[in-house]
Image (tube, rainbow over all chains, first blue to last red; front, side, top):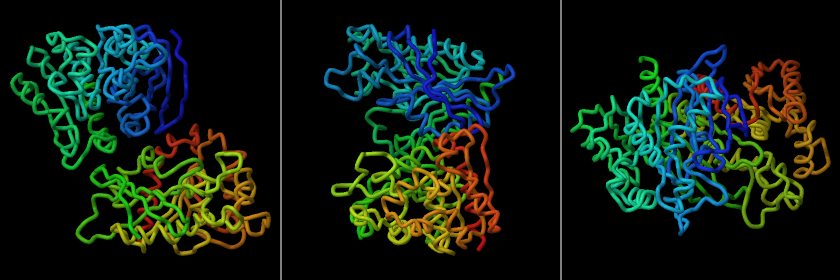
Length: 283
Length: 283
């Protein structure tokens, strides 16, 4: 596996890079960004935070707008931002070109329905292939991984962590899709990628996973109360109810006046990274 | 004069907005962004920092990538980011469509040469019209203005401050074009906007203005030593020599390994804002 360096720039004392590789999981080229903080060097291995982005995004959105580098440089965290779907020739898209399915909308599942099953394997990519690439190419302590995400990526972070106990030391989300089986974005995506057997969908729904017995040690969620997707798509109250019933300590912070944008995410990014750093250090 | 609000989002406790208005100075619509920090309200008037962007940019580049909001929220600063040229139907561009003249490249001068003299009046826009709009629409203390900029915008910040003594309480720049009369970008732009009488150019060249007697109380400049434009276009050594001869205290910080991008700017943005805040508060 060769990793192609598309760009590197020094920033906040570390190095922000963008990389591309031929992915076995998706059968396409995949692009991702990595920030390596100034603590790297001389054999040091550093904890890794994976950040999963939302609908329509690539690695670039959080890399440009996420304001994570200062905190990662202070805390000694590697920050990895993958793409949200396979892309390229031969990769099928939403038949109507909608933004909420297909390109930019992989929903972090391995599709089982044609024509998507061939390339849309984002769960395998995030859980298996990408960590291997990070371990092989960056000074990463793969025993200290955290995962976070925004919106569709919040769904991805929560479901991948819940379905793979012990894999991530800590989990957090900004405005996650809390229960895709109960919202239009999720019903469309899970039906399109997994088919109409709804029993299969529950393994890709954070709230249902908790109801079905999956557990986390703790969970931090920030949600703007001026988010236009709050009531119809995000529904944090479903996640909150499931966490309460399961005894999962959920810090759900409703942030007054904040919307769904990176202006919201960047405001609370440093809080999340500090929360992860505390849990990545003590183990 | 009516100001149209294109968007507002809460961020870092304040409000990041984007606004448009019909400009008398340029004869076009002009778009700019303003961050108002959480200290606003209850009649408080806050200091204002104007940030002038570089070639090819609009207000959006620094608004998305500049990482200024956290520091402005801590320090109580309003941050204003204008466009870099007039735009729209009837606005002439570089005849070859080059990036370094015309649209996105106004160089913060009032053009005197046709066909540019009609719309390319960025000096009047930044010095006169935009401050009036800020004063009328935002909780701004216009007795406490600072100016900063990047590359072409660093040139703009330095020359507007030097040519208008007392107007700005403080001035700083990232990787400024230090002497446009001595670099290809500047020779093309000043020739194109002002004509071939080079005596006119000196009033739009920071180094020449200092040589000709203009003064600043102090100046902060950050420059990456891996900036690909350093030797041919930026030439901070010319500014440094002029400041030394004139007794202007210049803090020229050569930053090892940094390039010309917002990964560089965002690293040192908070330093610059603290430097401005100190000078805006004590007067």
